[in-house]
Length: 457
Image (cartoon, rainbow, N blue to C red; front, side, top):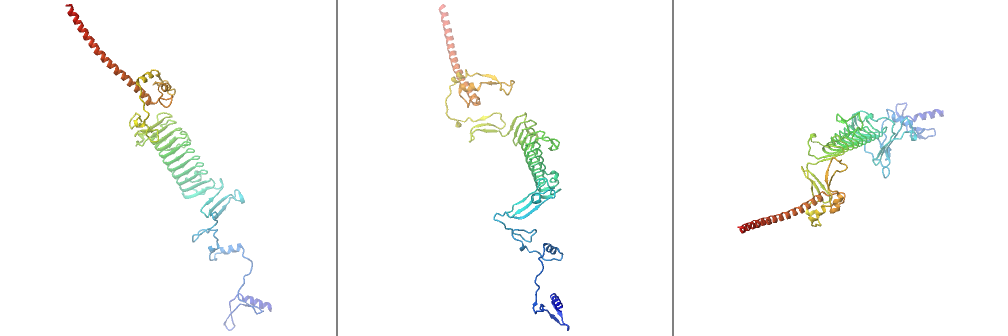
């Protein structure tokens, strides 16, 4: 009897109302136990729900509601949040907001995973690590993206068609912009349609190609086909040869070692050459320097070297050379001229002394003058003049006894000419006196002859 009553009481705990025999509703106040007590609420009971139970309940299609953001502390963030979230960490903001670690089944590192890590810190810093030689390129084909290829340690950002496919990506290379290729080891290419094709090659700008190792280019439409070459500006070419406007794909560093081309339409395509300015070319010679001004307007006006190891300069506005800070001493080669004009103004000189022309003439007698050639010229070339040692010993002019100042040599000659002119003037004066005396003597002789003739009569 007690068991039945208990069962009946337990059953009542799951109902809120019953019907009386006469059809009226009896509202229950709770579960009434034999001792007269009533239980009006159901107390919690059973084991703590397990993680699996909670996950199953959340994943159930009929589960409604959301987990409130207030269940997350300021140490964590939620992806795709409804509003901006604030993550507060230490004083320096070095606590991570995102901390993801990945691994591969190919090999194991610390903790049983390869050290692939992506962290975003609260101060805005981030780091992405990986394993060189593990994995594949993260993106193939055309498209806009920013990518980090941990397999090759390569970074890309911008747009590419096939330039950033795995076959065109060099180890430890960087490329950015549009359709720029960095296929060489340690290569760097930024801009539009640039190509860095060899080890440590660097290129910026538009439409440039650097094929040679450690080459550098910036500007537009430049070519660096040689090792250590440099091409800056527009249509500047370093090294060669070129095939259809690009470095020959079938030869590598054929010529132009360390050549430098800087400017507009300039070419330095042989070893150790340099072409600067506008429309300048080494003209196939080696070891040259050529510089051309901006006067040329077409390739037909290109200024060119004419020999190996030659330096050539064109300045249709003339040349100015200065040897002091204020620019008051030096020489000019005026536009269109072939004569140097050097400083000789009285205002630039001091400590004046007169020169004895007769003494200069006397001194010149002791200065040997001969014909000769410079050793490096060859005997087919002849010059005439004194030796610097003899000239300096005789006159003490110039800065040393191994060179002769052009102005000093010309001025000594000028003093000598003046002295000779003075002698000539004196001789002419004496010659005039002699002519007068000769005329007088002749007159006397004629008078004497006349007297003698008169006496004889």
